[in-house]
Length: 182
Image (cartoon, rainbow, N blue to C red; front, side, top):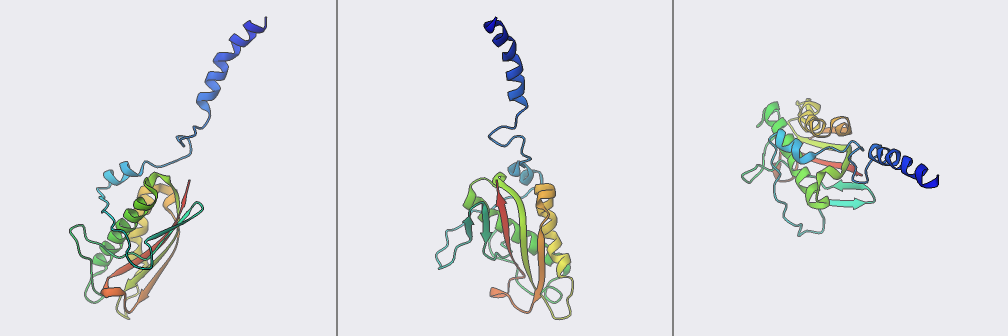
């Protein structure tokens, strides 16, 4: 009788195991970031190791903090100038988007797989702008919208968008971010 009962329970056990979340996170809401990047036509850049006293990323527990990054162009160089003077709002938004790609490139170099990012937690954005320019949030929206397109609700984050009279080497935008890992 014990054998017969055990045989009846095996199919139930197999069905129960299939409905449980897997250890690889298939049922945890993870985003296939590589597929999202391809869908959005975003190509990450190789990251050179830091030679200064600072690093591009620091991991503490399940959090990764980035240093400020600038708007790296795909072919080299950066976007320079003041938004509201040398640059239009749209050019500032492109600078914010390119800065986001630079940040994602550094995060990938740190953690290996961007799908390990559970959520974007905090973003601090600096916009190099003229004193009369007041659309820093609209500049930073290009970055924030890209994070939401990649991670959905987990891409929504706390954010500061600050105007400043100067950034290193006259870059248009500098952004730092904090992400949480699975």
